[in-house]
Length: 260
Ligand SMILES: [Zn+2]
Image (cartoon, rainbow, N blue to C red; front, side, top):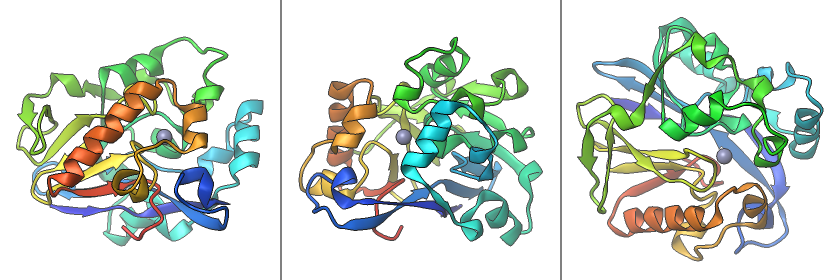
C-alpha cells in the first residue's frame, strides 16, 4: 500500500493563528489530503482538498471565507494532477473517505461519482440536514457539496470494530486491518482520523493543526476555537492524538507546516 499526503493549497497566515505556542510571524499553512494506492481496493482518497471548485459557488458566506483565507492553489498538488502522475483519472477513484465537511476537505467531490463515500454517521447526517444560519459560522458551505444521493455512501460505524494500539477502538474500513477510522470529534460534527496500521501512522487530520499542539501545549489556537462547535470534545480528541503519539505512533496532520 502506498500513501501520500499531497499539498493542494497553501494559506499565508500569522503563525500564532494556527499554533498557540508560535509568534506572530507570517507562515505558509499547507492543505493536504490523502491519496492511497490500496493493493486490493485500488485508489482511495482521504478527502479531496481545495480545488478550483472553491470558486464556482457564489454564496456571500463563501465569498467572505475566500477573501479572509485567500488560499493559493498548488496545481501540481491537485487531486487531478496527482492522479494523472500515476496514470489514473477521477473515474478510477474507488473510495473516498471523508474526514469531515469543511471546505478544504470536500472541493470537487462531484468528479468522483464512481467512488463509494465512507464517512461517520454524524458527517452523513450533517450533510443531509437542512441548511442552517449556523452553517457558515462552522465553515460548512453547502454550495460546495453535491447531493448525497448521487453517491453510494457507507457509514463507517457499519465496518467491524478494530482495536487501536494506544487504546480504544476504531472501525476497520476495508475489513483487512489496513485503514481504521478513529473518532476525533469536536473540530466539526463527525470529524474522524485514520490509522494506517502497516505504517503505524495516525492521520489525525484537524484534531490538531500543528505538532506543537500535540507535543508541547495541548491548546486549541483561537481561530480553531472560533469555528469548533464542541470545544470539550475537541480537547478530548487532542488528548487521544497525544496518547497515540506518546505510544510511538507517527502523527500526520492536514495543516502542519512541517513537511509530510
Ligand atoms: Zn477542518
